[in-house]
Image (cartoon, rainbow, N blue to C red; front, side):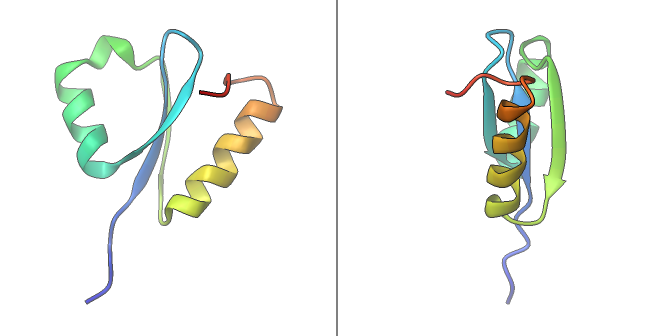
Length: 65
Protein backbone atom coordinates (compact mmCIF):
# COMPACT_ATOMS: atom_id res chain seq x y z
CA UNK A 1 0.00 0.00 0.00
CA UNK A 2 1.28 3.47 -0.86
CA UNK A 3 2.08 6.06 1.76
CA UNK A 4 -0.61 8.72 1.37
CA UNK A 5 0.95 11.05 3.92
CA UNK A 6 0.57 14.74 3.16
CA UNK A 7 2.67 17.60 4.48
CA UNK A 8 2.08 21.24 5.42
CA UNK A 9 4.24 24.28 6.07
CA UNK A 10 3.11 26.49 8.94
CA UNK A 11 4.43 29.93 9.85
CA UNK A 12 4.64 30.74 13.55
CA UNK A 13 4.54 34.22 15.15
CA UNK A 14 8.38 34.06 15.28
CA UNK A 15 8.30 34.05 11.43
CA UNK A 16 9.85 30.56 11.42
CA UNK A 17 8.24 27.99 9.14
CA UNK A 18 7.97 24.35 10.10
CA UNK A 19 7.13 21.32 8.01
CA UNK A 20 4.46 19.16 9.61
CA UNK A 21 2.75 15.92 8.70
CA UNK A 22 -1.03 16.01 8.30
CA UNK A 23 -1.46 14.43 11.74
CA UNK A 24 0.78 17.05 13.38
CA UNK A 25 -0.95 19.84 11.47
CA UNK A 26 -4.43 18.63 12.46
CA UNK A 27 -3.41 18.46 16.12
CA UNK A 28 -1.87 21.96 16.14
CA UNK A 29 -4.69 23.51 14.15
CA UNK A 30 -7.24 22.14 16.60
CA UNK A 31 -5.36 23.08 19.77
CA UNK A 32 -3.17 26.06 18.95
CA UNK A 33 -4.89 27.82 16.06
CA UNK A 34 -3.68 31.24 17.17
CA UNK A 35 -0.05 30.11 16.83
CA UNK A 36 -0.39 29.55 13.08
CA UNK A 37 0.15 32.84 11.25
CA UNK A 38 0.04 31.36 7.74
CA UNK A 39 0.03 27.90 6.16
CA UNK A 40 0.84 26.30 2.83
CA UNK A 41 -0.10 22.86 1.58
CA UNK A 42 -0.94 20.11 1.48
CA UNK A 43 2.08 18.74 -0.35
CA UNK A 44 2.25 15.16 -1.60
CA UNK A 45 5.78 14.49 -0.35
CA UNK A 46 8.01 15.82 2.37
CA UNK A 47 10.56 16.69 -0.34
CA UNK A 48 7.99 18.94 -2.06
CA UNK A 49 7.33 20.69 1.26
CA UNK A 50 11.07 21.15 1.87
CA UNK A 51 11.55 22.66 -1.60
CA UNK A 52 8.63 25.03 -1.06
CA UNK A 53 9.96 26.07 2.38
CA UNK A 54 13.35 26.88 0.83
CA UNK A 55 11.51 29.08 -1.69
CA UNK A 56 9.59 30.82 1.09
CA UNK A 57 12.82 31.50 2.99
CA UNK A 58 14.47 32.89 -0.14
CA UNK A 59 11.42 35.08 -0.79
CA UNK A 60 11.67 36.49 2.73
CA UNK A 61 8.33 35.07 3.89
CA UNK A 62 9.92 32.73 6.45
CA UNK A 63 12.95 32.61 8.69
CA UNK A 64 14.95 29.36 8.87
CA UNK A 65 14.37 27.25 11.99
